[in-house]
Length: 516
Ligand code: XMP
Image (tube, rainbow, N blue to C red; front, side, top):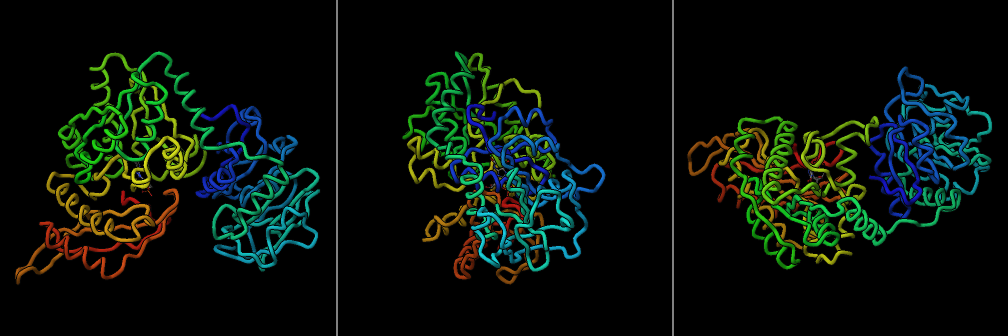
């Protein structure tokens, strides 16, 4: 649910994979922003009373039939507007400019120089500043009232502005790190042009959401799906603080956990004084997953089984109407294409897309507007220790999405043991805190090996180790050859059924962090 007490900077999503980065950059400036689909009716956009509009990039061409468009009246609301890539082209298109297929298309980093006559908004850029470009169209002719604010070596109109109406456009992407001065530029735009003061803090978020949970749940009870990860634990703490004894934490042991996970969780929660009920549900999960190899099917089955087990457990505890989940903003956007907008669906996240539409609970999702690093900050604000807060994330569907192909007790045992070796080796290393995630994946292929003079035909395990700020993008963390060698040696020697270990060197994008 959006926060209706603060006027947002509204980001209209035209389908770019980078739209969330825009929201992140703005929130890092402690300014509240929301993403809405560009296809939303104009009145709904106006009703949110935005302080400024940002139009995202997108994969379409403005002149194509069916391409998402912009109601020109949104440019007459008297609030500043910034169009990024497709966003700039759609402004030009609906105000009488001319957008065509670019004579020279630009993909990757190019050098941008502001025009001598550009306004001070462009002061963030020195001549020949690196900017990320990704476009096949360009603006051939400016609409009336606009000036060129900058160009690259190959794109004459790489930025434009109508300072009187406070409408601006950039062909490049200021929201990514490859555009070195991008954050400065966005800050100039929001602080100096839009005159927005910081209006969003974690403390304020906490207070508002505790209040909101109380108002939503009223005198009812709420049950929380605790997995022991940071998201569900912060959700639980927040709900526990709001509701006290009317809060119930249930941990479903789905049989897809890592080695030692439940023990650690129980110890940690005991120190936080959160009462926890553990429900053994391994059988039902493994039975329903039997023979299933399709990743989306696995996710959906796990989501549904979770709810089935919860309904049963909740019924045992009397009438509980509410279920709290640690759904995060990226889960929401990746699963439902920014509330029905055009962004492409990547995976049905366990917390959202995998849930059946008819559920016996009303959902409470107090982290729905947050990115992962913001959840960590909230966790600290709620008194969680650094040891807890800095744990690596573990996905809702657990080891099921790290076993490619079908899931059997034998394959679960293999991945558990191999993963325990990976974790043990990395946790002994000094760079552990630099990593976002590190784990093992069991591949659906066998390969030939030789052990003790005999031919083997056994499983392959992949090691993944990545750095990331919010899970939206990730870089490979190249482990040293010595460490990789040590892991490979230990896995092959101690995990029966594995004769080969490989290292995954794919960043996100184009890969995702999890293999399924
Ligand atoms: P991907 O694989 O999409 O993962 O690059 C991004 C981050 O999300 C985690 N992840 C999940 N978390 N439920 C979760 O709670 C899920 O279904 C899920 N799938 C992926 C993943 O571990 C990574 O940190």
